[in-house]
Length: 88
Image (cartoon, rainbow, N blue to C red; front, side, top):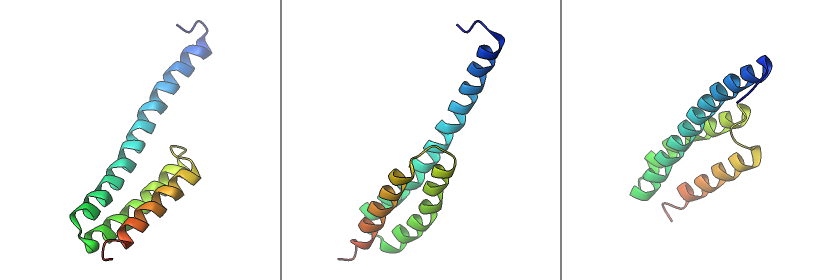
């Protein structure tokens, strides 16, 4: 357990930040899952709409420090490729 006053405060801050980050990550995963479900169902219109909603949410994860920039770009790129491949 932390001994100093500042260390105890840091423990509290880290716990709060962890909760916020978990929530943000979960939100990003939910949006990604909606795109994947639409792709699996074969509904291109729904998948396109879901992708348009998911992309800013994924990038918001980058600005909030939950995801790395390249990871987010890779996710968006792969999702877009899967959506594009539905009709083919």
